[in-house]
Structure formats: structure tokens, C-alpha cells
Image (tube, rainbow over all chains, first blue to last red; front, side, top):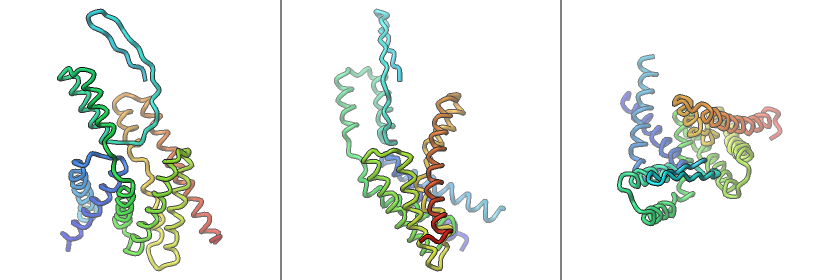
Length: 53
Length: 201
């Protein structure tokens, strides 16, 4: 269950990053890295806040 | 903006003062034009080729506004999810963002004052989101996250980066501009809250 929580958090962060990135008109090749960076970043935050607080 | 060009052989100096018009942020143009400037510096391209490449970059089609609209809608709904909203709240935030962002796009196309655009679209989005109050759902989260798409992230970040790099004046102007936009969001949102609190709706 822990893994699913982390993955859903990362997924939502990725969707949010893609959407808000789209406002600023980035090059198309940047989208995969935008999603990946946001997912890793927010999943890490989620882990630190939930399991190490 | 002041541009100075110096001819090394004849030591002639040309100056040009130009006004920089306000354009919407485009990271694609940023990166492509930056690449072009480095190409011009490295390969010593002739002026005609440079103009050709420049025109080609400028005339490239932009992302469809409808596509951006839906992406932003999904993004705001996921923010609602990240802040702990349930599925009803996510759906309401999605529709609120669609309406608010559409109003923003239309008003920006008509070149209406920025601050007015922000106030009105924040008001519209939060009004739509306040419909969550009639349902049994996480209404506070829905109202709070419905205006997040307006937060001027790029000017705020650029302002901080400018100040850290020593361009304090530019950084402060950017931060103050961003702060004004944030205040406009607050004005729009507080109009909705006042309407709701006094049960006018």
C-alpha cells in the first residue's frame, strides 16, 4: 500500500507539472523530463513528510 | 534595452535603444533563440541565414490553446488531489479551472489589463468552485485550489534568481509585479468568500 500511495502522489505531481508547464509553452521534448522531475520531487517530499516526520 | 555594437577593425560604435514589449512566456522561443545566438557566435553565420532561421523559429506553430486549457484543468485537479480533496472536489476544481482559464485566455487575447484579468478569472474560478459547498465534499480544498493556476510562478522564480545573481533592481521589479498579481488573485478570491459568507448567493 505504501508503494501505491507514493506512486499516486508522484503521478498527480507529474500531471500537475505537465499542465502548469504547458502555460509557459516549453519545447515538446521537455515534457518527459518535466513529468519525471516533478514526480520524483513530490514523491520524495511525500516520503519525507509521511514516514520521516 | 540598449544594444551597442563595435566594429573591431574600424573601431566604430553603433548604439540602438529599443523598447521591449511584453510578450507571454515561451520557453520554446527562449531555448531556440538562445541556441540560434550561440550558433551565430560559433559558426559566424551571415546575416541572411540568421534572418531566415529567425523567421523560421518565430513562425513555428504554438501549442493549441484548447490543449493548454485541458492540460491546466487536469493539472489543477491533480493539485486538488495532492492537497487531499476527494473525487467530487477534483471534478469541481477541473470545471472551475476550465471556466476560469478560458476567461483568462479570451481576456488576454483582447489585451485587457493584466490585473483586471487576474481578478476576474480568480473570481470566476472560485465562484464555480464554491458550488462544492452545496455538496458533501471537501469544499475548502476545492475553493482554495481552484485559483492555483493563476499563481505567477515564473516571475517569482526569476525575481529570486535575479536578486541572488546580483541584479537586485530587476529582481525587485519582477517580485513586486508578481506580488501585485498575487494580490489580484487574493482580491478575486476574497470577493467570492465575502459573497458566500454573507449568504448573498
